Image (cartoon, rainbow, N blue to C red; front, side):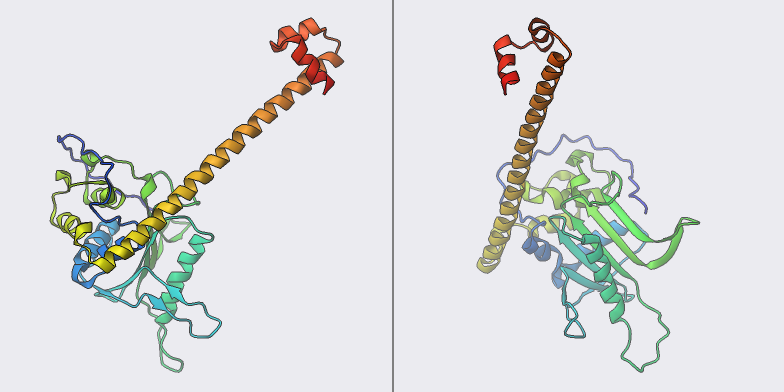
Length: 311
């Protein structure tokens, strides 16, 4: 595992505020928004720029071909797979790009299964000669949550097969990159490199009402132009509205669940405190303390203590 290297530079411009009037720009963390911004052949240079920044020079992608996102099982009992995006680089390497808003059961297992399906597809038909040489397969997860596995405090985690004796990469052709946006908390004036700018755009685009000057780069200008909601066609707008509603409904459900959990925790804590106080008062009387002394220790009135003892 390795982390992002942060370049050092400074900005003097004041902080760009966020606005409470969302709706000018598409939310890229909706199913529609993600595929609309990243999944079109006409705009594939946007996805290429994003991926190159994620790999941080460890891999350079010069071209991509979009593949069919549906993978059918070879047998009836095999499960079909649907990717958010699946692309092939100019050297044959394949990239699975998944955008996830919430943590799902066995999420890491699913990531491994996805890459395994792509690796397995590289095998030729039965009877054909094959030397087992495969092209690289990489899964990129853009996550609106934190993984339930130790990944440290940094927002970008890269995972590969590693030799535990030497801590060196054992097999470089299989990898996983997880971008945990909930861990990214920099303001726009604090952004130091293009990867951080990408994280900021993904997380905050739908809250802005104009492009910050700190993002004054061709690829970000294109994203802001492309993401203007008013330019969507009627069918596209309808799809986006449904996606946005689903996302907000989910967020409201989570907020309500948290509120209920907090209320239950408070009630439980109060009941526990009350139970402990009752036990303590009883023990005082068992050990021969007078009512006057019990009142002095607990700070309670005698009539309240008598009610507790009677119950």
